[in-house]
Length: 132
Image 1 (spheres, rainbow, N blue to C red):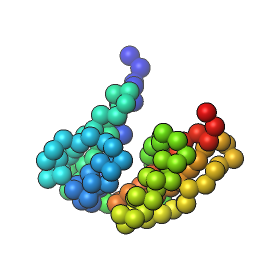
Image 2 (image 1 turned 90 degrees about the vertical axis):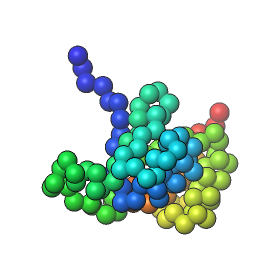
Image 3 (image 1 turned 45 degrees about the horizontal axis):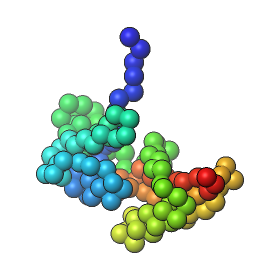
Image 4 (image 1 turned 90 degrees about the horizontal axis):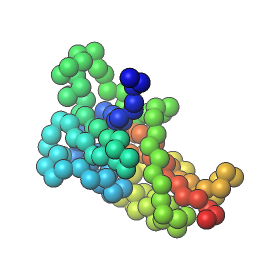
C-alpha cells in the first residue's frame, strides 16, 4: 500500500481564535469544538484540516515547543469564485484584524492573489483565475 495524504495539521495557541478565523473562510468545524484541544474539518476531496492546541501536542510530545509566527512554514491556499471574491475575502479578514501580508494583485501567472496571516502566523493565500 502506498501512503496517501489524508490530513493537514496545524498547531495553534488558542483554539477558539483559530476556529473563528477558519470558519470565516467557510470551513465547517463542529459546534463546541472551540473548547476542545483538537478539532477537524473535512475539506473537499476528503482531506482533513486538523487543529491542535500547543498544550494538546505537548501532552504526547513533551519536546514540543510553540514556534510562534510561521515565517517559512506551510501555507494554506483558498480558491475563490472569482477575482472580486479575492478582494472581498481579503478585505473582510484585514478588517477583522488579521495581518495583511500582500494586498490583492494580478499575478503574472494568471491569478488574482492575496496573502494574510492566520492567528498563529500561518500564511493564508487567496486566489482566483483572472481569465475563465
